[in-house]
Image (tube, rainbow, N blue to C red; front, side, top):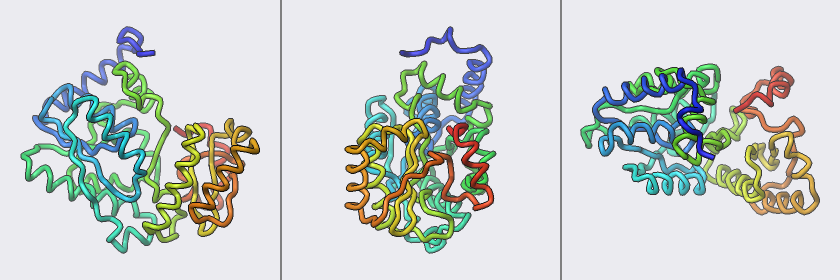
Length: 291
């Protein structure tokens, strides 16, 4: 059910008004669009304020599931947004493939360099992305450094709009992403220090598509060589363990190329592939607070 303007607190509406003022002041904008909760809301507001002077730029990368890319493209088309698809080349960069703690920095640097070229060629004044305040609390999000280096603005952050408020405002706009689960690129499924490859990323994508096909909302297929470690919301664990569901998911993971398939009883939690061993217990305890 669409949330009406009267159901939204005035302070949240004031933040959105601030966001519109910021975007209007840019004159023209290129938004790094992924189809996720934050960038979709930013895209919707940018289009409302600037119309055809708002350009969306989405990366076609092996680390983005084909189904996610298709959904983002379809939404942009349905909404009448200007969308450009660019090819990024992070899988040609040895520094990225090494998958150290700076992987996201190398990826975002490649993305923003491609956006700079697009903005220059098309007379776009400002580049923006969907960072919010909560992102600053996640130490794995080193892509913010790349954004600063390339003068990419974060208007959602500047307006002080939180994730919950973005979901609230997205419902008001009838955006299908309002209730969308959190998502990160497929390369985030690899433990820090484990090299990333196109072949391995494809295995993860196939495993996660199987989980998606069974209607799981929040899930991850963590890559550990021949082993696939599945995470789902703790409340969904009983359903995953139903005989038919379990057998089909195991088969799909093995068809993707995994020898072993395990279920992580701690359930889904953000960034578990990058968690240091000593922090594992704390991460499990805080799993329910992830968004």
